[in-house]
Image: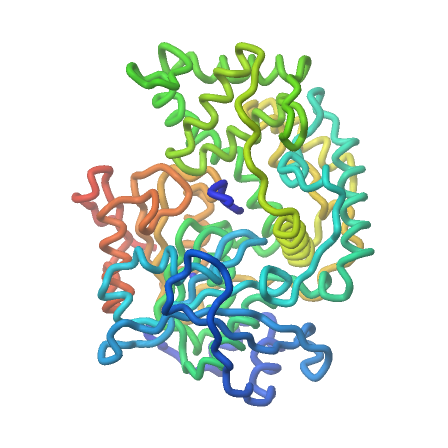
Length: 509
C-alpha cells in the first residue's frame, strides 16, 4: 500500500518449459505477435526538481491485451542513462508502490541514492502505470468526501457497524463504473506487468532488472512469472503476500499485525525522556492512552477547519496512527495530534495532494485491487470479520477486514490472478524490515516460500516501510547494492542485525 510520504538469475531452463508455470499464457502470446514499436521520441520531462539528464517518452500499448489490435492507450516512462557506458549492463526498472502511485520522477529522486557502481551499470527507468499521471489517465470522479483516507481505508463506525462502509462502497463503485470508461476494467497487476514488457521492448532491451517497492514487489513478481526469460536481477523491497486467492484483500488484513509489530516502537519513542513530543512517562502507558483518546473522539469529535474530513474523530486519529507508523520520522505527527487532542485542540490542517492526483490514484487503486480478484459482496462477511478483528486487534478497530470499494465492484475479474511459483530463474533478492506496518514480515515470508529456490531473502532488524536505502541499515543496503552491481547473492537467507554490521546466515528455504 502507499506510504504517507505522500506522498521485484541465471536462466536455468528454456522459455518453453518455464511458460508451463504461467497461468496467463495470453501475456507472452500477445507480446510475441505484436509489431515492433516505433522509435522512441525522447523529450525533456515536465515537472520541477528533476535531474536535467532525465528524459521522457511514451509507448503505445493495448488497452485490452486479449485484443492486441484493438484500442490503444499510452504509458509514459522516463530514463537517466547509465553514468559509465563502458560498465553499462542494462535497464533497472523502478517499480512504484501503490497501487495508485507512479515512479516517473524516481530516476531523479530515489535513483540518485543508489551507489555509483549501480548508477554506472544501469539506465534508471521510471514510469507512470496505465491510468495514472502522464499515462492515459482514468478517474472515477468521486465525491470530494470519498477522497478521504478514512474512506480509502474503510474504518467501521464506532460501534463496529459496516452499513455505512457498504453504502460508501456502492457509491464509489457506481462512480467508477459511470466515469471510469472502458479503461477502468483493464487496470490490473497483470496488465501493468505486460505494459512493463512493452516498455522493455521499446527500449530495445533483451532483459530488464527491477527494483520493486511495496505493491511494486507484487508487480515485479508477476512480471518475473509472466516473462521469466526477460528478467535479469530483481530486488523485491518490502513485499506483500502473493496469495492469488486474496491478493489486496490479504494485504489489507495484514495491517492488523503490522500495527501490532510497530506500535511498541512508537510507544518507546513517545515516552522517551527529553522528547519534546513526549506523550507518556512510560511505553506501557501509550497504548491505553491512545485507545482511550480514540474512544473519546468517537463520542466527541473536535472541529478541524481546513482538514478533510472537517473534524478530528476517532477514525481520523486511527488513520493518522496507521500513516505515522510507516516511517519513524513521522512519529512526531501522531504524537502532536495526540497532545493537541487531549487538550481539545487540533494542529494546523495537513496539506492535501491536488484533487486530480487523488482522483487518478484512487481510480487506479480501485481498478487494480478490484479487478485482480473477486471480493465478497455480503455485508455479513465483513461484519463478522470486523467483529473478530476489533476484539483481537483493538488498535486497528476492525478496519483491515472491512469492506472496500471492491465489495460492490460491478465487474468480475477478466482473468485469474497470477500465481507466483518456484518455477523460473533464480534471480530474486527479497529485502525486508522486521517491523513494517504496511507489508509485515509474515507476508514477505509467504512470498519467500512461494518463490522457493528462485529467491534469497535478507531480513533487516529495522523499523519502517521500505528497507533498501530507506528505513533499513548498512548491512541490508550493502547486500542489495552488491547484488545489483555484480549479480552475486548470499548463498542462503541472511539476517542483518540492528547495528548494520553483523549478519547471521540462516538456513535457506
